[in-house]
Length: 64
Image (cartoon, rainbow, N blue to C red; front, side, top):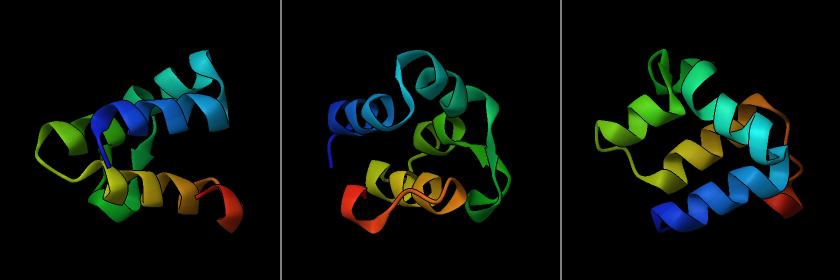
């Protein structure tokens, strides 16, 4: 997954403002207590970060 696709999925699922805020404010326990933005910056794959967001926010499987 490309980073641009990741950002589009986040905005589509959570809305532009909330989605952008989640990336920098919400700590994901499944990623070692890092935010999505921190995890990606440290080299995690966007697909892995997207999966963790989906788990954390109970995104239905058909939209993952």
